[in-house]
Image (cartoon, rainbow, N blue to C red; front, side):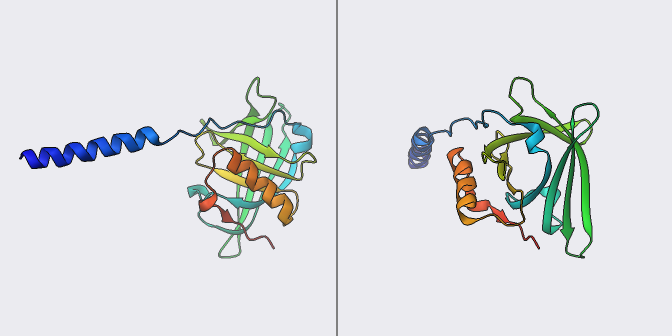
Length: 175
């Protein structure tokens, strides 16, 4: 019995010291400011973290953003399924107050809203990196179906600098 208690205590101490050594990642930061008028339009998904809602998407994933009459943003996500048919989801995004439009709340199913944080953005709005504060979701977007290698590396660096682990990044086929 004493031997069991000693072994268990040693394991607990080891786990506690390992947890103490683990440095928590700094909070995710968004870009300083987003000009929503420049951000609107068609974006192609270059890569993403796999997520449940995109499980049937095999290629040609896009997001289109346009202004609604009430000032919110209409979001239309579209992708091609294995059958060759397209799947589409429409939602609505609103900017979070005091974030200079770099943080949005997106809803595809009322009343549920998700964080859509722009954490990397090309100065010419040719690519964007979008994630959430828990680092569960990540998208690399481009204005064109293909992103040049230097631009892709810059987008990846924006994600890595925010503490995202890119080992789970899944690249999207665009045709």
